[in-house]
Length: 409
Image 1 (cartoon, helix red, strand yellow):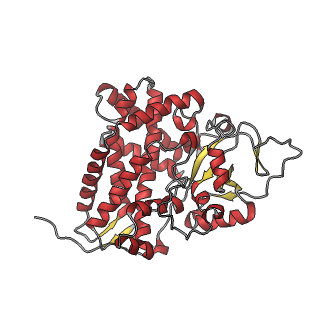
Image 2 (image 1 turned 90 degrees about the vertical axis):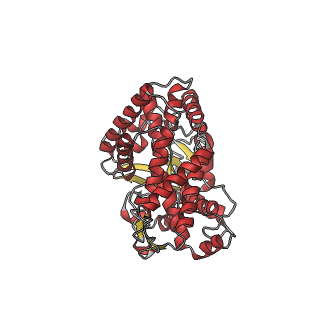
Image 3 (image 1 turned 135 degrees about the vertical axis):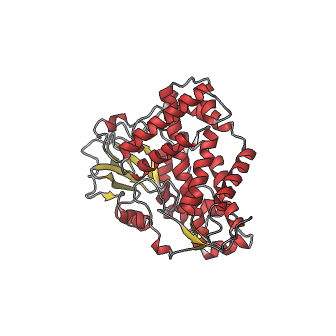
């Protein structure tokens, strides 16, 4: 990477591609293909009206940027000086005193506390918890022979399991989930940010007074001695990485199994596993499709494209994973045994809870397949609606049918 003079820098390509529209959400992969033909691996986009960014859709360019925090730091404070609080994507991007938005010593301090707190989770106990929550969720709808697996299965599992791990009572957890949903959808995002901030503050206050065997209490007790403000922002990151992405990972994986006949046949024949299905989805439709945002402090040339100073550089995990430079010779969606995808990011900001997320999603999907093996989509796949938003890959609903089970008296 070099820093060319303004005179030698290539001109910015005209026209920016909107990532926030319903049209983009309906078929992002077609949009990525058009981007690649027109712009190559670095694409001028708008994250919201009037909010420009560069979307990185090349796999090798993405890895290089993610592993170069010196030139591509995660601190957005110079950028957000020009962005009003009402901007719909600002809550997903603004500076917070946490590992996701810090570098250097502060990043090490926050990440160390988070890693230690998450590392205290008992994996065997976690699997048992997921199975219990999954069984209860299925018990709520199995008599009817139909369900929305997103709102009635995937979301309750992500919400209840994460709340249990964080020692969060339902009353506070409901407010946290509501705030996170508003922020991810970039609708009423400022209101969602306020709801979320108050709810995590209430959780921190509760656990300072009544510590327990949970992630929040372990964060409070860590040698980093996090302040109440810092505690709240660690929890924002944990919930942000937990409820919405985990809900969508479970839902998107179930959708793949229900609609990919070849993969479903391999699964039933024992030629592939639920973990393979998860990895296929993490390649093709990762729940965080476009994120891992950085803000170069000065103009930087990457492969002949000048990236402006203090303007967001967004990694498209979805597009980069499917870069022809990486996938040539691999059938679409066939990545069995290969986990080189960027869905968990890479470099200093790699997700510290990926093993826990794998375990929760794998247990949830496996339990569903065992409990309701004759499940089918209730509508043609083309009628499913994907929620707009520049960052996530998220269904509005996942309606299914299955043979009804009589109530146990």
